[in-house]
Image 1: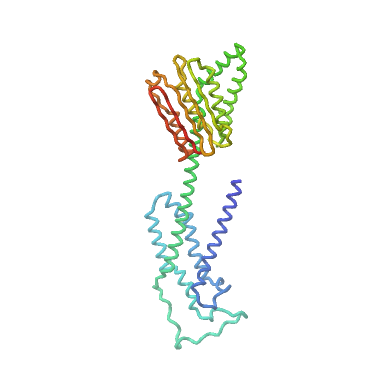
Image 2: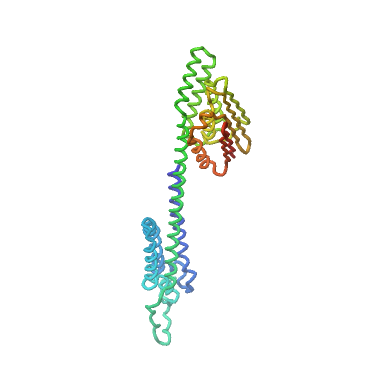
Length: 365
């Protein structure tokens, strides 16, 4: 698909350049008042083709060779000097516009009539030949046109370079975002999997009826971690289901002294979301809020409406854990990821108290 688009794009560029130069070569007709050179006879004169050659060749040499070299080497002063030299050559030596305008003052005897016979030669002016052209004449028009053509070509090339650089920047940002997302996916602590399997093993020894359900939820959660690895967006319902499975598995190691509350509104929405945007906040709550030796609580609330997704997570913080320094790298990475994926479309409030931790995420999707 991309190759076909590039092929079509190249053909369109060739056609656009051909039409542009055809229009450029047609402009001299506006300046020539000699009716005898109008029509097909005009394009049989070498002056018109020399006029086009003098401007077409510098345009492409400057656009595809000289300007890329100047940009790559940053020799901007050399570019200005070369532009002045080209203008001088066109004004004093080549003079393509003056040569073209000579057709306007050329006598009709230089052209043939329709039968191929020459027009009658008019008598000389005052019996004498007209004086020769002044060779020291400065062709200002040619100098102006070539500078306009060269500068226009450079500007177009610079715009193309800028657009290509912007595409590369966007591609790098996209790859960086995918790397950050992959990093978040890899943050599932091995101890979580080990503890979950150990708890399921304990349930199996006692023939607990919830064993099969726990194995199924663990497999679904691992499938979500693996299958959505390269997806740009997933259903918000799938993200919420992964959160529910994660909480259910964490409950296997929760004692009677810990209270877990879950509230969900609108979880059946068909909205899309980037995967692993909400789950890190739940993981963080269990990582720092779940304690076996002392009372604790975890409260999760997710609300989905037509305009936004609201998530609130509140958990108790152990005094011993609060006294220890925490890097908070996981939440910082999640905030950066939100800034890349949802710029100006989210509100994230984090309140770290002495005995509790509160996170509120408002996502406009």
